[in-house]
Image (cartoon, rainbow, N blue to C red; front, side, top):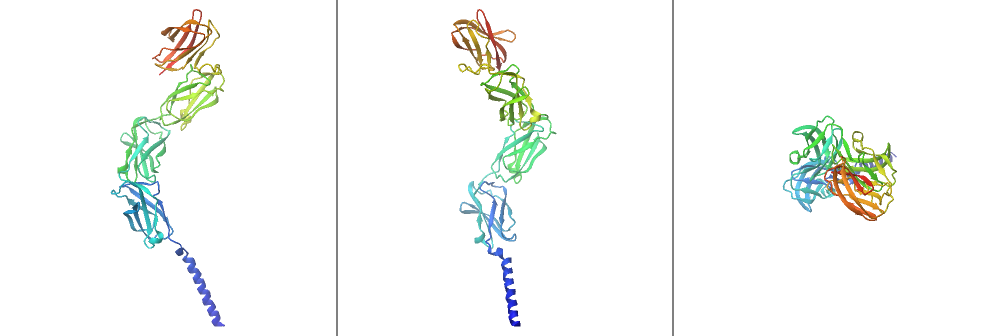
Length: 430
């Protein structure tokens, strides 16, 4: 009986030992695997650059790895030999390599090469120094203190590279813009309020791994110490828009052309239309006046920088929008209209465009109920006659070209007959 119990205990101990071996060596039955994280298919290396190779694996950090570089199916360089399985390795890309997008890495465990070998995606190596091209700011850029601005650049190296950006005023470094940011091609920066007015600012951008080879400077540009401002040139207090008409809004500002603006239309204190949304700060915008607007002389525009609405918001003068002639399908859309009923054959008087550009012509539409001879006179606001000519009108619509006016300003255009004088306003802008 004792012998039976002894044998049973031995079997039980052996079974427990066997189960423990299975539990402790479960991973030994799993094939070793390596997953290469970097480089990827989007990676670009440059010869002479220091790059970081990254991977994960399911075996010990004490394992020894080898890394080779292939171009297509041809091995071109030994990257590392018998390095510990730490998950990363810094490599200096040889200057002797040619340009190609068929490079890839091979990594494997020295103790298990056949089971563990893995390849990266194909990636690119450029033969030459890393370069950065700063797209924005440019020589025409204006920043304002307190403004959020977007810096943009392009480069010929990896998006995983880390960059630094410094701001210089002349030769003096005045601010660290960004530190250890990825090479994404853009960065949003809040311009410090402490900066002084100057047109000698410029940015310096470089790859931290290759500062001497990659450093680049922007053009000199301007930073203004103060709030961004917008000045609306057109419309003015004398402006008349007509529903259905295409009009040009004009403004100036002291900040970057790359800024995004919004424009709203108000009638009194009530916002009635979105004119433009996220448009570049180009200084002008063409707008089609909605047919739904009511007659009013209390319209005005609001324009502001989307990034700095509170600081940059501005309003135009109050101006007029009329829909009196929006339904006249037989006539073109006009900015200035005279209509006081039939007088000696002249029924209606129109001019388009107004404002007109200096040195160009406007077209005057004269609607007459009979054949008649008239004088067309253009005079400035002092009464000085700028142009005068005799015109022969026939029954119906008559189209007459004005003489080009070279000086900007406000003028009066009159159509005079023997018994009447009908006038309208002509605005000339540069």
